[in-house]
Image (cartoon, rainbow, N blue to C red):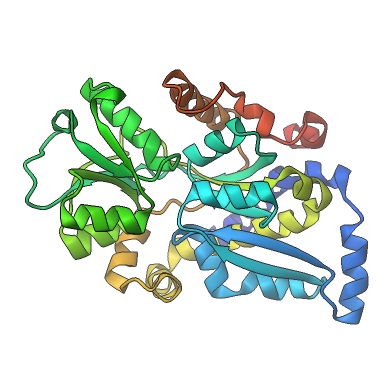
Length: 336
C-alpha cells in the first residue's frame, strides 16, 4: 500500500469515526441543500470562527471548503477572533457555528453554561505555547516567577500552562500577579516592561521570539498536552451533522497537505495573518497535524484541566467534560 493511499484510508477512517453517528440524526438541512444545488442557490451556511494559527487558517487560505460546499448550496462565512475564549463566546451567542480553540477555553465556556460539543481534535502540540521573558531579563527558571507580573489571556490555553508551570516550580497561583490581556495588548505590555513575563501561543509566540528576541523560560513540553479542539454549537451539530462531516473532511485533507508542504504553509499563513514568513515558518514547525475523534484519553486529559481550574475556583462550578459530547445514541456506531 502506498503512503498516499494509506493517508486516504486513514482520513476516511478518521472522518467515519468523527461523524458516523451523525447519520442517525440527519436533519432536513441536506434536502434543502440538494434543492439549492439544482438552483445554484445558498440555502444553508456554516459560520466558522478561526484564529491566527492552525489548520482552519490554512483551510480558509486554500478555499477548498467553499468550492466543495458551493455545489450543495451551502455557504461559508469566516470570522476571525483574537483568542479562544471570545471565539467560544461567539459560538455560545449564535454568531458562529464551528471553530477551533485550545484546551482551556471549552472548560470556561462549559462552566458558564455554553451549549457546545466537541467534534474533533488535533494531536498534542506542547511546544506551540510558552512562557517568555524579555531577552535581557534576569529571570532564569520557573521558580523566579514568584511575585512577578505575568501577562496572559484569561481562560486561554496558556492559562493552564501557567498553572502547571507554577505547580512544577512549587509556586502557589496566589503568589504571582496575573495580568489578563488579549495578545496584542499583552505584547505591548511586554515590550514596554510593564510585565515580567508573558504566557502566549503561536504565532504570537514565534513573533515574540523573532521580532523581540524574547527568551523561552518554559514551553509546554512535559507540562501540558495543548490539544487543539474543534467545537460546534450543539444545535448546529444535531441539525447539520452532514455539513460538519464535510468541514472536518476538508480539515483532514488540509492536515495531510500541510504536513508535506511547509513552504506553501508558510506562504498561506503569512498572507492570512500579515506576519512575516520567518515568523509563521517557525510557528508551523511546531504544528501537529491529523484531526481525530475525541478519544476517552483526550476527554480524561480535558477533565484534568477542568479539575485544576475548579480547585482554584477559577471557574464558577465543577464540570463533567464528557457532558459536552454528542449523546451516546449518536455516537454508538463509532464503537463498532
